[in-house]
Length: 194
Image (cartoon, rainbow, N blue to C red; front, side, top):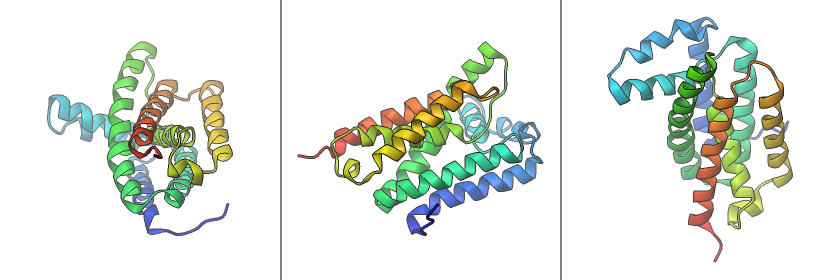
């Protein structure tokens, strides 16, 4: 992998740092920290904090390593194309908060239906992939700069892995992907070439 530093990678590196610190604090068991998030606020605020908190907690070292590696790799692809304002605002507000909330709603429903517990950064990661796929398929300045083959290949791999590997939260991955596709379609409408 060719690693290039850019100030645009800062939000991704901060996210990775927070994930690693929380992993250490939870000793690899997200249930150790979950009671803190749900004890703040009430109603919608409590649900939002719970949904957001889930995106920072991971089951075991390999789960953390896979998700943080994906975050850094996608962050590089994102930072190579988009200006700093897009990297910061879209990632922090859109993918992290938006995907966490959207995925949180879907995962809550999935938990009720499947009676399993889901945690991890995959909602935000799949939202990034969905966003990049949608932009690749659009007619904007960004679409011309992206490595379309690599991004579509990553998306196919993630979707295949979601359905083929046991224990992966299908609801968490797919809800993040749908959110990202929607955000990318919105970007295409706003930035469409004249």
